[in-house]
Structures are given as structure tokens and as C-alpha cells.
Length: 166
Image 1 (cartoon, rainbow, N blue to C red):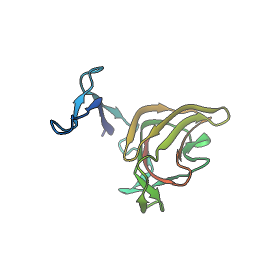
Image 2 (image 1 turned 180 degrees about the horizontal axis):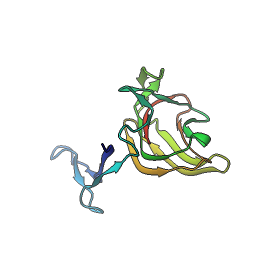
Image 3 (image 1 turned 60 degrees about the horizontal axis):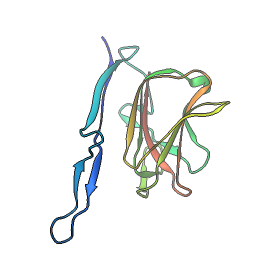
């Protein structure tokens, strides 16, 4: 029996057009640089009928803590693997424990994700805003690579929902 992960992504560039006060309100329109929504979907076959997942077990999430300094490794070094799918989400909540979410974070607190060579420094870096998520299919990590998360706030940690599927 085969096993797979299905995913989809989309984005729409929006421009807010300012209203004139009494005549009409502000309104949003699709920006003309792209002129449409972009999206795609796919599926990735996993290596076994019952794939292995890091970050979840028996339908229960294990939130990671994205600290304000340093970083938390979602995957590191000797644990490296070729993941069929990597899912990482900024929950919009402070970290309380692996199973309990804390209070809301501020709207501007982002989750910084790096995929880096442990001995060489960051090679890929991106920031996920509050409530945002990313799916990365077919992530090939060697034994010297790691996936790290940290908060871009000086005071707020972030509860990170993630699933690393082998």
C-alpha cells in the first residue's frame, strides 16, 4: 500500500486603493504586476506505507520553541534525512509547552527559519509571519545540515507547529 503527502500553495498580489473620503472607501484590487493569483499543488510519495513523522505522534502535535536568541533545531546533523515533506507554521502564539499554546504574539513577530550547514553558517533564511506556514517538498539534507527556528522578537518566543515527513 502506497503512502503520500498532498499539498497546495497559492498567493495573490493585492494593492489597496485609497478612498476619497466621502465618495468611496478604500478597496483592494489584484495588483497589475502579476495580474492574477498564482498557485500549484502536488503530491509526494513517501518511502513506506506508514511514513515516519517528526513533530507529531498519534494525532498530537509537539510544538517546538522558537526562542528569542540562538535557535531551536527541528532537525540537526546526525539526525539528517531526506524529507519527503517539511511543513513549518508560525502559530501566532507564544510557546508554553510542547502540547499547550501560550498567549498571542504581537502581529509583527516573525518566525525566522534557516536551513544551514552546521559548521558553515546560514545558507537559506526566510521569515514566516504570524499565522503563516510553508511547505517544502523533497528536502534533501546531508549530515552537516540543520533546520533551525527562532523568533525575530527580542522578547517573545513562538510556538512552532511542524511536521517533517520521511
